[in-house]
Length: 103
Image (cartoon, one colour):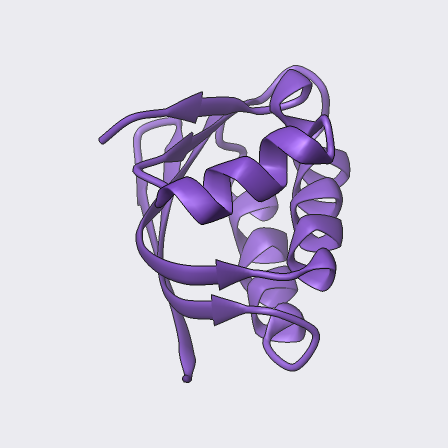
């Protein structure tokens, strides 16, 4: 399956809409968009994950990259993740660094 990410910035909120699979082959694209979101000066990063079908360990590392790039003062909300994706985040303990939010 392919991967797509779209970025919207409104006021001080950057919103990413993810679709497909976030894995080693797609992480670079995700990182590029995170760089762009960080440059926007956003105070909140909302990652819409309703259409994200798979999150690999490389995808988890991408979320760590997002946390580091955005900084500790920026809230990151991961919204609408399917249960297998949310479980991967919880099993890695990363739900303590980002907010997992139901859609």
